[in-house]
Image 1 (cartoon, one colour):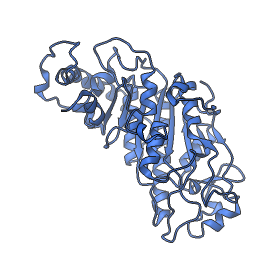
Image 2 (cartoon, rainbow, N blue to C red):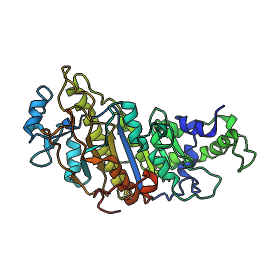
Image 3 (cartoon, helix red, strand yellow):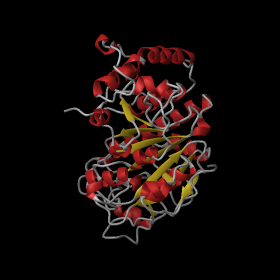
Image 4 (spheres, rainbow, N blue to C red):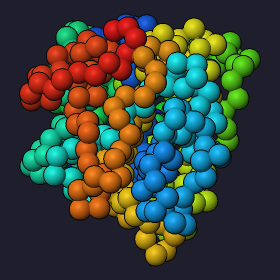
Length: 401
């Protein structure tokens, strides 16, 4: 039997989700948010990004020895200091860095790394190493559960997932709502007349009445969305015509629509580069770099930039030494990106020491839960210890809390 909880977890089409009526409603329930609250946008880089060819330690002679075919020439990099530089395709990211809108945390991972895509991603998404927790609640779902509950018959999502896959575990919560949409057309839905029947009671929690309550106000919300899009049609930002570019543009549209969600989540896939890595990796990093820059410029022009922080992570890095297929295999630590006007900017941590490896892998310098702890307590104003089941020392990621 389809339960309300299962419905919320798996819905990816807005016409069968509670998104529309709750994006714009002023009677939010789950998150108890204000439309101008601080917001976290998470970008999941699926597949294990090769951090060593993203933030490149060109000053380490071991880099050239480990990467005979995949080595990136130092004179092509966007230098961040005298030792590391960004991949040549990340010009837009370098502009954000120079503008103080990009922070890069080096050497991020977790103890006893697991090179499985599935388990490693579950660890990042749940902030737990226990397999039993990996089908439970995610770190962002638990965080939104901790926000005060506001009594109202309307159900507003605390988080919105933009993508074509199942809503990620990171957003699963006991009480908070996460909903999904995949494209702009989802916000201009034509409602099935079958949904227009009145629910029996605002307090009735059956799935049918839940759907009815949500869809009854969707027409009005859709009209409001269209009205707001016409007002913002003259956006100065130019998004790349890529999957991530379109998804970040949609997040921007929802933000401009006065969404009360505190968390947005999306993904860019393709980073599992075991073969012929150079071209694929370059394309992915340019898509990422250009899309994030366009998004931040867009929300800046809309005067929303002081309330948005972007977090981008991958489940692990790659092996230091290239393989025989012009690619790299699953590794351990890698860089994490934070972007936006509120971030402190610059490099955090030290560049990886390629002469001091752990069985051929980079040593983890920063536990990823320290980044989560900082964002929870200093940005989302949520007790990090209760979400992460323990205390993790914060990092100087933000220029203001």
